[in-house]
Image 1 (cartoon, one colour):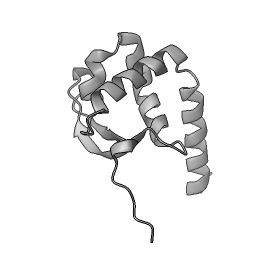
Image 2 (cartoon, one colour):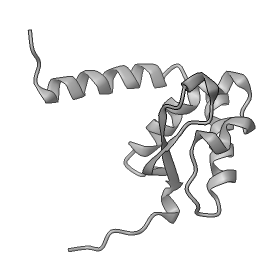
Image 3 (cartoon, helix red, strand yellow):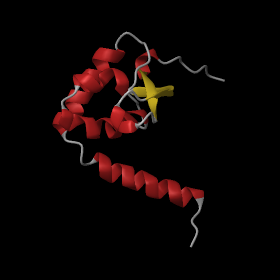
Length: 110
């Protein structure tokens, strides 16, 4: 049975919402604090820069948190590219690079 792209997107979104629900308020607060500290100067950052600021329990939640913060109506983060992960556990996987939304270039009204 095949599904439409819209159905696949809906399923993926539902899965991400369920996974994000497992991120504790404590982990979210720690990750947000690290993101704001590293991204406050407007330069792009990735997990490579914030990984060492987080306790080991927050690492699994960080990717979910970052993705969630890009998808909100008023996002905290804007994805600006990808870089290679420096974590040995990821074996050189590409990871997202972000900037704080407040530093993102504003879109001009057409």
